[in-house]
Amino acid sequence: MAVDEPASSASMAMVKMASTLILGMLGLVLMRACRVFVWGPRRLRSRLRGQGVGGPPPCHLLLGNIPDIKKIRAEEAQRARECRKDGVLSHAWPSLLFPHLQKWRTQYGPIFMYSAGHIQFLSISDVEMVKELTTYTSLGLGKPSYLSKDRGALLGQGILSSSGSTWAYQRKIIAPELYLDKVKGMVSLMVDSANSLIGSWESRIESSGGTAEIRIDDDLRSLSADIISRACFGSSYSQGKEIFLKLRELQQVMSHGSVGVAGMRYLPTKINRQIWQLDKQIRSTILEVVKARTQASHEKDLLQVILKGANNEGLPSNISADKFIVDNCKNIYFAGHETTAITASWCLMLLAAHPHWQARVRAEVLEIFGGGILDSDKLRGMKTLTMVVHETLRLYPPAVFSIREALEDIKFKGLLIPQGSNIQIPIHIMHQLPEIWGTDASEFKPERFAQGISGACKSVQAYMPFGMGPRTCAGQHFALAELKVILSLILAEFSFSLSPSYHHSPAFRLVVEPGDGVILHMRKV
Picture: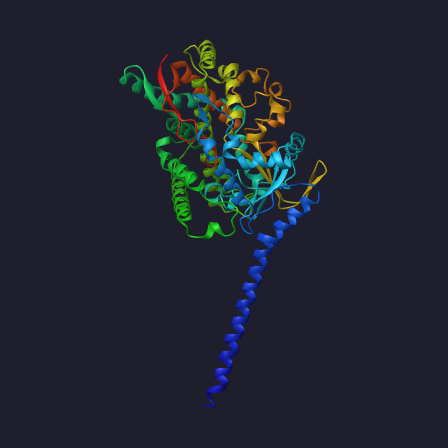
């Protein structure tokens, strides 16, 4: 027995050492977690509070103000169900979908802070502060890191969510392909795609005896998907259909997920498993499209530029070639068709609800278009249509927030914003501020844009449907041209009114969309 004692003692010593090492590692992990999820957020709040910035105190150690947000939303649920009363459309949906922001703005002022889990938001709807933010060009102000993490399956490190040199490189590669001179050459392609939808609706109306009830939003998604596919990727909607459907499904699944809750995205919940599966399928399909492209010759388009950028020596070292391709394709697929289709849906809904404006725009379209060939010059001459589009984007901006993360300490208007703070500009609030837009800010009045954006409000920086500053959406010229093509061709061929079955229910699913779709009664002009 004495021979075994040294070996036994050595084993016990090794077990003790391993236990000490494991406990030490767990201690380090715990300390890091506390620093990231508890002490760090407290330090940010303390620095802002010391400068006079107020806000609701976090009611939960890990969830922050998320329980408060859910409670306030629950209290407003009945009002949301009554968004349309007595046949009158209400466009005051911001107070229904985001009542916590309205409540806290009233309570703490246009600059306040709150917590969504460990993410610290500094909500800013002060116009003068927003002006400074729009002119800030330093890379020290970037997109929040949680976008590429909690929303990683949809956005990854693409142009919509990256920061610093990674974003600058992607912008340099992608933006020139969407400049106005390039978009002008895409108008005929947009017209061809839209005419296919027009023909489909004409057949349905004819077979229904002259009038048909059509849910337009799904058809407009398909149309917009076809346009972005053909214009930027050299393929038709039928080839990219799987990608679009999977992205739409991913968007809907992610809208039910939580952002900012520590470690939540790693847990094998039902939602996370769906996200992981969809992400894998979308990535695989995009790479199949890319493989097919590399094996055939094509004219230069956006996909070709992305492929070239992925193999360029200037590609940042923190992103692989495949990830560069997949993430930017997902960003362009999502932003390039979803937001435009939603805006077109809202625009047709508003014109259906305001027949006098529908008649005015149709008269202008028929006068300028006249059944001839629609081109960029004719689109530019449609002033009334442009007013309607601007007003639609004001009342129903697809993206409701413009968000930036302070990647270093930054000072605006005497306020030092600590590194790690997430600056959140609520676009939907800015677009309906009575002191900027007038007492009729929540009403549909396209005439306010008769003299352009500068004549519509007291501060042009308060209008930001395509974002702000150097991060303004690279595809805004493409989106506006596409909207005008779709709307002008539809107005030239059809008149329409709201179906009695239409229920006005704006819903936030990463973007603001018609919750129950847009259903119209349509007939040939």
